[in-house]
Amino acid sequence: MDFTPENGTITMFSTTWCGYCNRLKKQLDAQGIGYTEINIEEVEGTADLVEQLNGGNRTVPTVLFPDGTAATNPSAAEVKSRLAA
Image 1 (cartoon, helix red, strand yellow):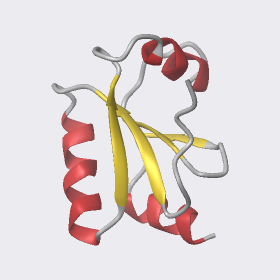
Image 2 (cartoon, rainbow, N blue to C red; image 1 turned 30 degrees about the vertical axis):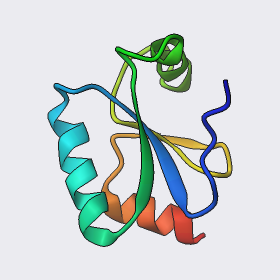
Image 3 (cartoon, one colour; image 1 turned 90 degrees about the horizontal axis):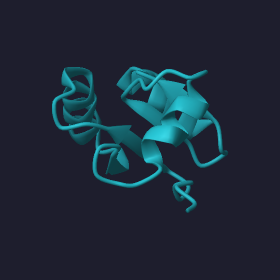
Image 4 (tube, rainbow, N blue to C red; image 1 turned 180 degrees about the vertical axis):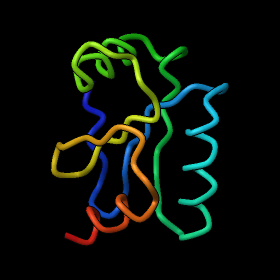
């Protein structure tokens, strides 16, 4: 399954209990940055994808950008900057 987001948005892999995920979502909402949230505990295969993107670590939030690159626990400022590039 392809989780690459549309231009101007991100895909955020998260869990319901992740405080960093909740903080990033609030910051993105406040700045009007669009995202699709994928709960890695509910969507089959996504935990493995997150591990692949993070060198074997199941770290969230992991963000996927339209250009196919990823970032682990980025700030909202980093997300905004990378989307503008």
